[in-house]
Figure 1 (cartoon, rainbow, N blue to C red):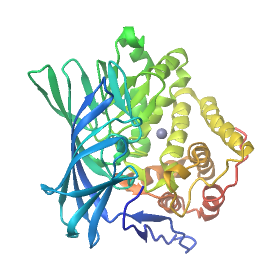
Figure 2 (cartoon, rainbow, N blue to C red; figure 1 turned 180 degrees about the vertical axis):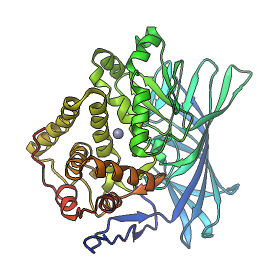
Figure 3 (cartoon, protein in one colour; figure 1 turned 90 degrees about the horizontal axis):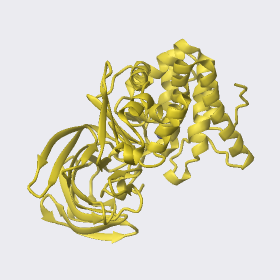
Length: 452
Ligand SMILES: [Zn+2]
């Protein structure tokens, strides 16, 4: 994450009403607000590449902005325009730096257009009959890389007429061209973190599961490639309607779109985007053999609220995306299968943490200071993070815990959060001072000794 002219400011200055002390989490704020992306792309299955244009609307939030940097990894840049005029740019260290002839005006809308092609070695998977994006969007899209700067997204894909597409938001048009090609236009109206931008294209069957809220649409390869039939898909996703209403009740608000798509792709995959996720055929077969293995369906759906809507402000608070979702998968299993399933799921986390301790891979779950993505200790963020939520639930009791989680989710809907936001909300709801708890278990490295 390299945003030039970074300003370090205090994101929150929280005075806890209970202890009177503030302990701030620090978040660097970009000098630019990225508002909207409009990409027009045509992937090439055989060459494992794509080409097209991206237009980025942005607003400078500081004076004297003279340049902007975007990811150019795996890309060839053809041309760059700012407000319709040719712009100067430099390519170095896999980054595109656009230089402006004069300082940009603060709080004015600008439009940057980049023509490019890409051969993404990461961030996209290519097969003969389907392709899809995976983490991270910057590998196939010229884009910024600030996790807390959310944008809306229009994606216009040109593809073969016998293929189906899935993108973020909703499909607003599908135009058939004369050359056996189709242009599919997807639109995401709600601002989302950039890493949730993605798409899938393939020869896919669809199965729609009606729920009281959004429709769940499962897209999958035909039986001869995937071994999956409509009957098997129905069986594998049997609990998804219940899952959706369960998470909606915990979050306190429903999905903000009419349908949610699961794209079942080759291999082992579990990757959320916004409005859809990519799940692997291998995992689908696993759940058909053992219904307890439905974690990937639950995990990616839960990210719609925790991760996509309520997003960690930087990687120091990544556990608010992943630890919480791991915990909520365990809670969903408790709801569906009973107490033992809850404990079993949490025990997986206990064992992962134990292994990390043995291998000397211990770190805090969250940090007051900002860390880079590569500094994340995933076992701490995912597994110890889940256990911290378990401990909070035990400490507060169900009434306060769920009330606080709902309050937190509703308060920070479509926003970015730090650990202090969570702590503050729980303290407000429960009237319990959690400074010691958070210092010990979250900002500290102490490992809980849990007998589940
Ligand atoms: Zn996740």
